[in-house]
Length: 436
Image (tube, rainbow, N blue to C red; front, side, top):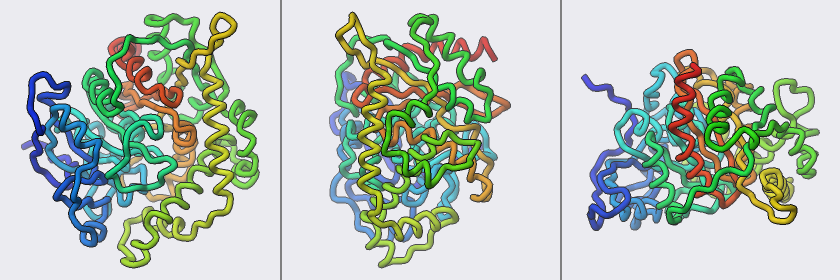
């Protein structure tokens, strides 16, 4: 009997409006997270009370329409974490989609069903959203490709907002060719000549946050870069020290939130704290009226986070916006390369772990995940706060569990990053197989 992965909230068949063999996604199937409006369907946002209290959408989100016009067939909407407020992938009401790589582990969220549908070969690709990690985390946990685009690069119209300062529409795929085709369509960018990286930075301090040996995460990647682009491009950096020096507005968050934590990178932990503060504030603006009107029954973890968001104030919000500006400027400078003493090129790539380890076990108590989540958000906030684009690339299994590496590129360099993944992927797979 076929395994039922529990990825779908609702199954249906939505064909391309104008089928043609000439369209880039012809013959491909996809699924959509239950956060995107689709004409005639109620957007459920991961919660049955939300589903009950909202009318059907009278239009389809532009991103979904773009994919349909590209020739792909939609086969349904996928389960997500309630109100997009978790990176675990467990849904108290609808059940947890089964991780296709490790059935006793969480699939990652909040785009859990979308990642599982791809990882389990139920569709060719899928759409999700990523505010604090909701594409990158499930991509890593399910052993597939996942892309968080530059903030603002893909339309979020027709998508239930979580926190607009960080909300992005991302996508998943198993195959790098499909992954790139979907990306170029969503980004509305033409195919361009491959631009090789001008430098590849390895954030050595970030890899020390992972429970997986740094060599296991970086060796195959470094070997692949040497083969394809040349070893002279690779540099080791201490990202935490750099951010601490170049983002002065972080100082207050570091003093308040990070003293005495020997298992963190203080500046990145402060970065995560600033993201979560602004996220809570914007979530409250978006959803306070509904939460207070209906007092919905929310699952463990979600209930506490929503309650905390309802208590958010505008204190330090301006500081959070300053941090976003300073970090984007600082990371752009880090990735730039001076060429012929005068021309600046920003085709640098920063390598970090996507998450600090393999997916946690199902039904793990929230309190036991505190350190893991803190490290995860330190890593996830790098692209989240800067608005840079990030891709999670699978590195097969370690001790029977999926692991990944992430590449981060400058805001607006999404097409370049897609090309880097496309160029690297096959060589990286070969190196992983040869090394492990």
